[in-house]
Image (cartoon, rainbow, N blue to C red; front, side):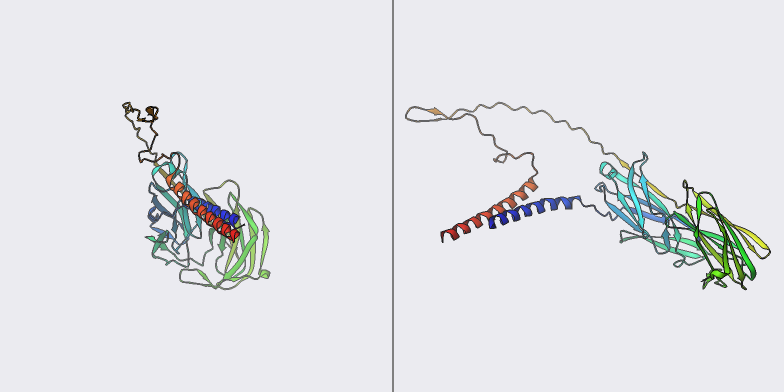
Length: 389
């Protein structure tokens, strides 16, 4: 039993060593210096606008399929895309990009294995995190590459002032471009009632179960509502709702009270470059039409490289002069006897040549086999001595 256990242990060591080396060799690497530049395309934007993040990248010829590099967005920006491919001019995917929690991870494909000087660009849209920006000012934004290298740019973010004497329409993307949230803020009260008729444009279907109604009579210096509260259900009624249109009425609107309504709309049909929404707000005897649009998140990029060329090599033929080996003789009582005149082939080092095998793995396995055999021999000797006693 001890002998069998020793054999099993030896084989396990060999397998773990050999396969362990394979696992290490197959692991992917993180490329620290792949991203060479990052900047915000727009010099200035409104607080509700989207901006483009532009990236230049390049990898060394040692980069391989599965290797990655990452870009972390600054707290002032929230990515609106979740993933895209970087394509070569002939349509081959050079790398893929995935954005999770505002970290973009780029992964090389097999294109890097068959090309040299692989490089390209990438871009994606982001919106501003309203809690992290300064309005009507230049905002520095710092991007981090692989948690080490930083690139800093600046964008002027305008706030403007919201006129609460008028109704307004706005919207934003939720759940990575699959759902839009449309909002309407009615002109400030007082009014006996306010009726909002909201209509979505082509390519969207309204979610009637998502309607939310809230209000406030307070706002800051740029007109943003403060201390917003939900409107009690007994004050409003969803008069009608279909996939295309919602009609909402709110009663007893107080002095300076602003009614805000939200409704979600899902993307339907073929994707469009831009989605629209409009609303008619009737307050007392006044009526106004407000509209808004949402461009779909924009993301993409490119890549390319050079196909390595192998120069043909010419080997000059060598001529080996025939050699004649004189037979040797050994004297005996019966006379001289000729020895073999065919020499034994030897390697250049004087040892038998070993071909078709990689030296390093053979050496490792050989050492392990010797160690295992030594252990078996030691166990056999101990067993024999025990039997003699």
